[in-house]
Length: 267
Image 1 (spheres, rainbow, N blue to C red):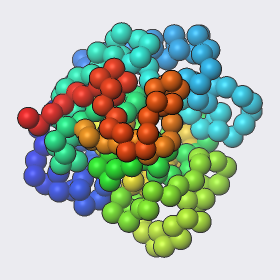
Image 2: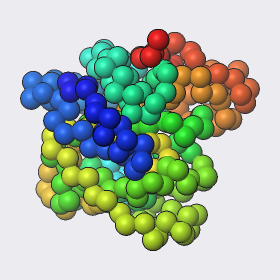
Image 3: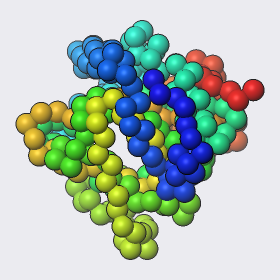
Image 4: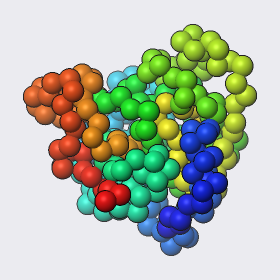
């Protein structure tokens, strides 16, 4: 795993709100990530646990059901995925890019855009979550080559500095986010194709989306969202366990060592 970051890379991330880390995984590590992700997703889909497989429930013919197969918090139910996601090297990379003193896991998720899958509309990540932070971020590891043909990520650079924590859902209309931020229509989108084994890191307030998968093969990615240590509850339950969220008050620090483990600290 390539964890060394240059000053130029850190500056690029902080200016644009995203960066592609080419060949982040070695070929051997890539095969391990592919195997574990495939096994963890297969186990999760077979279990059919309500609330965990976000796009594999409800109407199988809906638009969103064909944006991607989305399995959340696989580390909670698969030992191999738990080992991958709790690697402190991942925390160090994202913590260094964000410039924070500690990193906790918010949640992992597999995102598999199916053959001929629908586009992922422009959206922000952090407004969905149970904490509000301009330093939240996600790592998106390409398990297949992500190309313009099969649904590579696109970004609006600099929007992490401008976002107001308002958002839209991922629906049929690619441009719904511009109803909230009409001024962003003038920002030139940037595509981020990524070879398998590369990682794309983006801020939780950077506007992003993905094109449709126009090929007959899936486009697989394994991702993890991260929360700066010290973040506090904003009143949204999101993926928090129901009983835990019920006991929280707005402003409480989210520091449960099981639900949101600290995987890296600068100290």
